[in-house]
Length: 217
Image 1 (cartoon, rainbow, N blue to C red):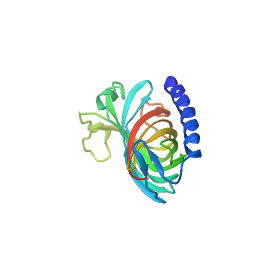
Image 2: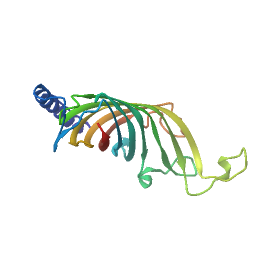
Image 3: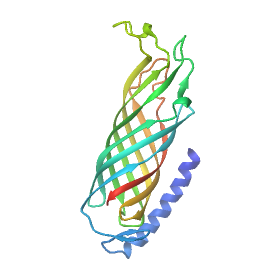
Image 4: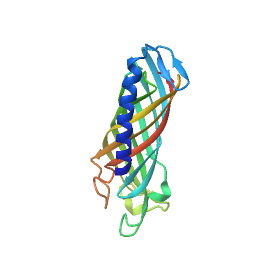
């Protein structure tokens, strides 16, 4: 993850220099790889942004979806959500003294994003996610002793909600007037997580993402 951060920093500097040169000679049109796009004061987008992170040195693959409104090309407000998808890789053998379980869950919330030099073919964005999530330890076998209040069998050993704050930075390319490609890195702070035999900072870590946006920019 540290090596990825260094590469992205060098890419970030290159993008800023390129964007400044391009903006100094550009007009009001949105530059793309395959030409120029029209003008739009209010835009919108939907996007996919799968990612990779780690929970306590365990590889975690994330699926992500987002959507929002874009004001004056530069400021985005919307919603975003992510969930980890590699269930088999998230098995913890000693959740309790007698049972192991899969860690399942996800998070999402408000998306705020500022775009620097949005009319340049290659530019930089600064997304921030503010929201909440939920995580559960589940097993294929039902354990009635874990639900003594109502006597029903179930397969959830423990579950909890948590707060999420995740700022990041992305390099973005205007491929077509309706499509953008991006890659970036963010840091996820998940506060208030309380699961049995689990560190409260389990989910605090960097995330690398690659995504596509479709819409009116």
